[in-house]
Length: 404
Image 1 (cartoon, rainbow, N blue to C red):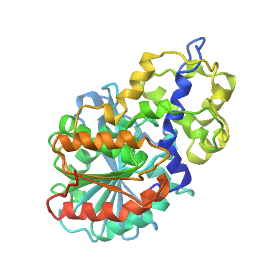
Image 2: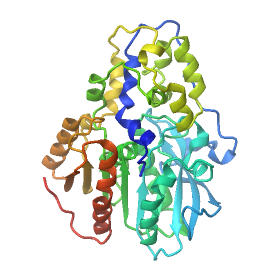
Image 3: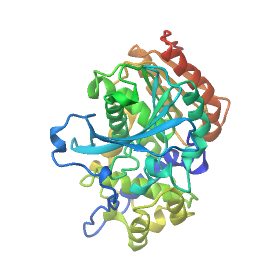
Image 4: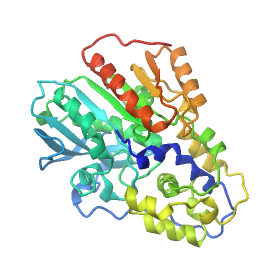
């Protein structure tokens, strides 16, 4: 479930890059750097995509069997979704269908952590690469639910430009992925109960999908969402940023690039980079996790920013606010299972508690669990069994518990 060092650091340190957009005065305007388009035309947006409905299936492809997930069919689905500016995009999700699935067996949309900027890092590519990254670590948990007969959808929730750090986008793509998968008769989930799950960055996409669903996809009947280690307020994380060198600064840099891709007019990080920063940006613009980490190891914003004097940048701050779940006025209508460490050093616990409190006041059936872990990584491991048991109960149709 994304339980590696690189996955753990991703969202907890995400907002370290946000400091970079608020430092310096910048000089000549720079142009955002986008990933090289995937050479496979399957991933490209078709002409006339704007005429399609969000979640409408564009194309499907059967993929080869995987030793990682035995006795399971793999299907790649391309569908229409929407980016953070309301524009149509083509998105993808990879569906694992166990041979043992019963008719209308459960469908779990699992939002994994994607620490990447390049199209070669999509889940459908990573599953067949020499470096399985997070997916091989998640195989145990995913195989457990596949053995239960659940189908699993793995959306590429960063979108076609790999807008790493854009949390709200991840929620929209997740919902549209569910819409799409349920339209395909061959997958056998047209009438299946549906739930969502994810931890850390995947938890952020899951939590946003749950909160957005009443407005963005009100027709979907989702049995529940289990989200752990969710960074719910990017602004509060920004306030606690330090400028010391960090082994995972490459991930911070990647998040800045991703946000600029999604918000080029409001989050122009490239305008605030010095020559070293621009070189690092260009180096990792199409990279997956390992190369990103290597490029930024033990660096800091001081190395890559053109100036360290803090300045007011209302547009940049508004981007951070729009991707902060605590500040979003919507609430889920589905039951929620939320878990985290009581002393997680990577996410502001107060923001999580405030979000939970607001949900309870709105009548959400919320079950929250504090793990015995003092930090982010082991909290994920300790919370998984309870999260899966909670999801299984939702699929059985049992009333959702609450400890509001």
